Length: 230
Image (cartoon, rainbow, N blue to C red):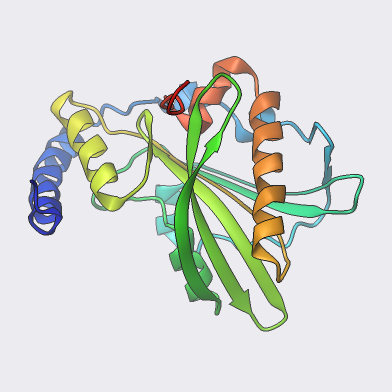
């Protein structure tokens, strides 16, 4: 059995070596002129959800030039359904995932903005077509603002569950001479009740992915595995 305590350092060293070659090659998975626009591929209205102005979304933490290097696109929106439920959506896209430039995990962003963060067990959301979308869940809290969070990150063609996953994907792309791209998709709402919030978020995610044009769906979720028994 592989010891994960030795696997991560080994992958890190391999990833560093591959990344050095990648920076020299500079062959990005998705060239800048071929990146689809988040504003265009994510509808402002889908299912029971409609965009509303002035979303109160927790943003990525970097406000200097590094943020502009990490992210070439960011999309922040708020959506409301006919029952009055409100969901906040953040999508951040980075064309180059390397040792130096990596999409921030929401845990870091929330902690840096004064939230207490409690990671919850990962889950897999069943989608139409027999696929499952791995999701990470967080319970976050700041005075007067309890905010359950669901998110996923795609690196290359894979939704990654862990740092080891991300290192493996980067190493695989490095062997082929490419820098993988990456995307973070995060949904949240303000509520002290986590389980109803996660059910609401799951509904929002499924409706959103159904509404995205098929040619752009992979840009958000990569290649997903089929559900067990599907």
